[in-house]
Length: 426
View 1: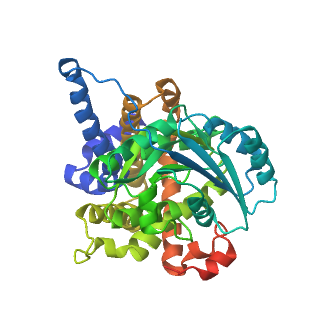
View 2: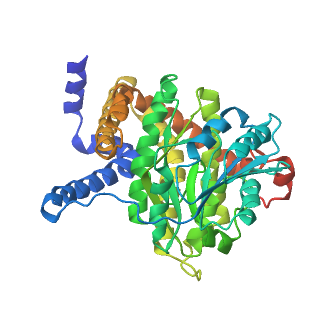
View 3: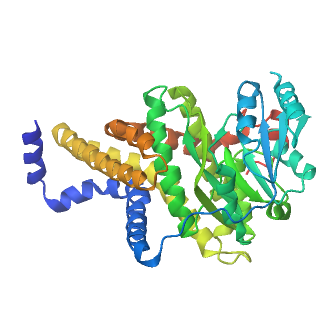
């Protein structure tokens, strides 16, 4: 079978083969692999020169006052572990827990913790969504930096130290932490997501940050300059608050940075149903924000126009909207113009190219990894990634079409009904 496939490959004219394989060069390959390779080559050369220039030891020189806001709904089960993980991990630290209308005793857990630990405050409010919960905490603290941590997440040692360092630059308005998968060993799906997070968050956001086009700070772990939040009026209510606040900060001129070793561990969906629901919600944002609410950021005539914002939007429009939908047109063209044997051989070529690209990305991940033993375990799931990517392409297309046609995000239960009714439907 392998010999037959090689014979087919050699028999196809190079121009025809390149034309048929062009989608491999239009999707995640250039977005992650080419950029990551260029970044790795640059860093490798720089690191090779360190013995000559003198290697600098990492240090934490910036120590602003920090308020960690833990806003959640029905997070009683893991809250104490999360608070214990945060408390005492940074010298100038206070914690505000906002219970957004929980029914599982989340406030009681938080109050019990606060009785035994100084600098912890608990607020209970009627459910209004995560944006409203985070805004509730802002008047209660005078801290210079607001760090947002999900109630069910766990921070690595020195994570807060790491995430505040880029804020020493007054031009930086927010910093995204590196979100990793905590429950990676549960099943095959969580193992695949573990590598996906390393590829898209560790490598993807590191590259985006260096290029000045980072457009999101993870809702699970992010740091914000307090004065920057005050300038834009805090978080807007509605879906996708983690991306929306970043675009609003960029709009008024702040830079957004990524702290690759400010690590946060979170649990990812363990079933296809839960994963599909999560990814649909994520994909709605590119239509809601980059194509509607903040479309003025791409207008050169806008008073606050920046070329970096236009590049951010173009990247999102091309890779998150146009190409996922165009793929199905291309697939229909191939299916209707070649025979089944040709299509099967072409599919094998696609698979091998995608698998090779993912293997190279895995090697780059190991170069930057803070825990190579942990991340090396991702190797055995690499052969399954092309199938996973195909599934995600289906979910992305579904999400884009439903948001374009129905504004589906504004009927999602992630935001309370009374908030959805009063929020502008971008």
